[in-house]
Image (cartoon, rainbow, N blue to C red; front, side, top):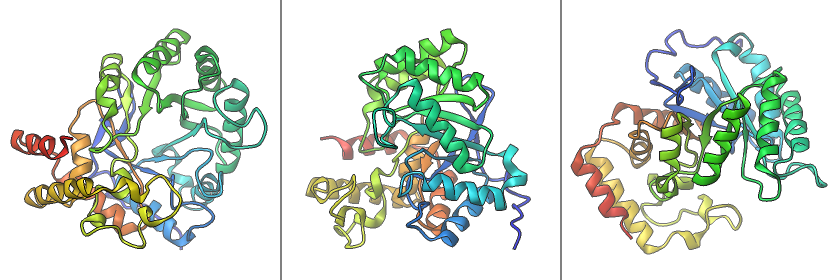
Amino acid sequence: MTYIASANRYQTMQYRRCGNSGIKLPAISLGLWHNFGHVDVADNYRKILHLAFDSGITHFDLANNYGPPPGSAEENFGKILKEDFRDYRDELIISSKAGYTMWPGPYGDWGSKKYLVASLDQSLKRMGLDYVDIFYHHRPDPNTPLEETMAALDLIVRQGKALYVGISNYPAELASKAIKILKDLGTPCLIHQPKYSMFERWVEGGLMNVLGNEGVGCIPFSPLAQGLLTDKYLHGIPEDSRAARPTGFLQKSHITDERLSQIRDLNSLAVQRGQSLAQMALAWILKDERVTSVLIGASRPEQLSDSLRALDNLQFSTEDLAKIEEILAP
């Protein structure tokens, strides 16, 4: 059956200007880090993408290494883009990244011009695109001059392979330098993608001020702290959770009694606000006007629907914010 997007798709989503640019992004964007690889069920992730666009999510965020296996998320997205979203390409913001290990040898990782240009060429081929809307350097490279990495991003825009460029995981001082280099080259940095949640607040130590002062957008990833900021862990560690797996970013050792107590206290406040914990966690990030969009993942359509309801209540009273700080205090 041919996919036809909802005629009402732009009526419920909020859109925010990205820094000083002409681009607006949906307050909630969809990341394809997990759940869109060859190991996943195609019918499920197709439904997630349909629901996202029908709900006004115009921004889909990928990277060269998303899967698993690496590259498969871009391949699968490209297939659905061709079959279902071809007529809507100009309504979409599609982003990709390079910076982590993608192929063997000295040219398949980090931040050289050789790697970034080659990686984007591969990404475009996998997705069947002429260009991406945003291309990021995925992480700082301590061994490549920052000038070379930023010159590669500038080159990619001038080649017409990306409309805008961004950086991800850059600390404040390095981000400031990168932003200046790009501005001098004539290809301004559109956006920064940092890890940010109630449990991961390093960006508040200077990065958010840099982005605000420089007119660069911010799109936090992992806003739910790998699922900790949901109702999944209210009663301990479920057997089917990420924390129960032997591998991955979230380990059982991360979930201390103190952390579980914080999760339960935050959940109680969310209930008082008429929200789920996940919805409150997303709203808490979006309260900062320097945040353009928050990047979420979804393993099933119902999970996406739940996250979207965060937009129903983005207001926090002074008392709410004080209570959250009290709960999060070490």
